Length: 277
Ligand code: PXL
Image (tube, rainbow, N blue to C red; front, side, top):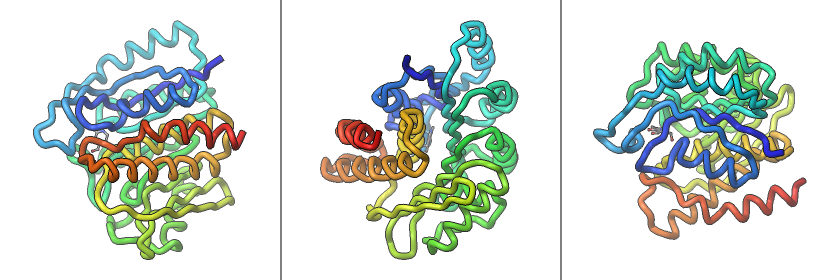
């Protein structure tokens, strides 16, 4: 039977981000996605003047109906939530404590800044929410926010990146995959902390800002973990998938604001996973 995955994040019309990428990826990886959208936007917030229609009032009603269906979800994937949806999950996530895999991407900011619409109270609430996760996938800005460190968008040494990852794992009692770490050697790294086990990978840094790559990473990680890969294997595959998607976007000379061209890389992803199983 296919594993059911509750996916909760926004649905943005323009720009391949959040729910728009998680649904096809979780399905392509062989799972059964249960989408619980938190908000409907005309476009992601990288486009000025986007509309934002909050759907959080529906979320508790939907979850209550789902409870009556006895769905037995095998995973929950939470991404960009917004204030009201975060409140809903604060109430509901503890009730899902028998779900074996909870992946939380604590989407709040990037490049040393909070995203538009987020504040300190949101960061505080996210700190409480992630204690219910199995694994979190912050970028360095989100890691610094969660730890209450000063925000610093400068490239990091591997030592500083490892310290961010291990401090998060210890403080919040979760597995940590620190993503999108720009390193002083001009490469991009991913740091994986699972208890005392620490691993990392580096890939070439491609200049520019690519919307949705963190969302793609979290969805691939979640789907690959459900297929039975280890956290290290799933993280390594997700980082290479992301990098291949960026390279294919560059090759097409596509505007990265609209998201990255990841679908052409799905056959590679499936082949890599089946090789590892
Ligand atoms: O990719 C992260 C993300 C998700 N959802 C919305 C966003 C962003 C980043 O800008 O605006 C609505």
